[in-house]
Amino acid sequence: VANQKGGVAKTTTAINLATSLALSGKRVLLLDLDPQANLTSGVGRKGQTAASGTIYEALTGEIGDARAFVLATDVDGLSIVPADRQLTGAEIELVTVLAREQRLRRFLDKLRSDFDFIFIDTPPSLGLLTLNALVAADSVIVPLNCEYFALEGIADLTATIDRVRGALTPSLALEGLLLTIYEDRTNLGQQ
Image (cartoon, rainbow, N blue to C red; front, top):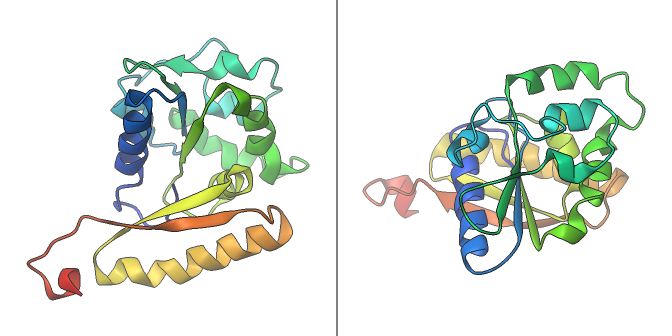
């Protein structure tokens, strides 16, 4: 779930889609890749870390057992790899790491068989964390709130997706734009 614009309901989208799928009997993993850690907080795991730590440790350290980064939530079938503010340092620390854009992919490859769906909540930027998410993902859902300025950033995001597809992940698909924060009383919302 990606959009470089903040406040477009990325986290809300990830939580609601993942929870709905888990309630229907699917095994779902949420991965909080935003240093604000709102996804972690939103599923009631603020301040909690798994046995091996948070996504920060998974991205910047050596990954042994990837399952040791996963926490259960209060919803059956729904798990999370939590984040905390330490994640802000990952962008800087990864700059000198070889194949830095593939760290998340290598981590998630160890977990894919355990889950039916994995949702990655990205930060509101097109930096190294979002790049890692795009490289690791099979497809991208772009929440787009129904306002003028939200439309301006879509060209940048689709260009980034095209570059990732061309250079790193040819199979990356744009799942679609998800219109959010719809207000039918405005002309733009109606359009």
